[in-house]
Length: 132
Image (cartoon, rainbow, N blue to C red; front, side, top):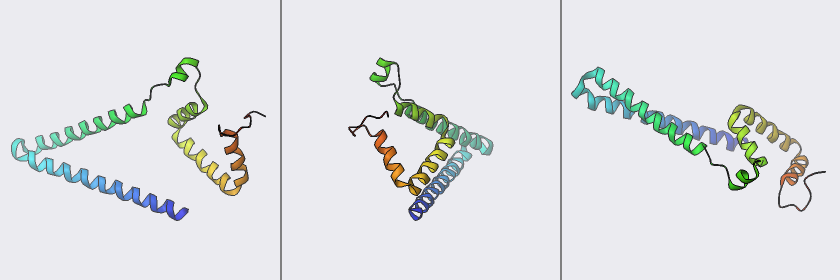
């Protein structure tokens, strides 16, 4: 389990490093291309401007994907489901959510029977009532 997690982290770091190399290489290529036409200062401004536009586009796409319309059931009742409220908390406090997930994982690892009981409690397919 831990070996797989470490391998995943190493793979993500390698991809991030490769993406950084690509960005630096593309920036230098753009600089070298534009420098002959408008000079070094102008080429640096073009590279800076293109990076700003790229960051703006990525931010717009990310914010558009993050903003999700409310479901019809939620809009009709005026109340949000437990999963919707939990998703809102995860978006507002990602560090606290990561800590809670780590604590839940540790709890499930140390006491799998308790984890099974909790999963059955929140399972809508189980025929039992959720309230005691």
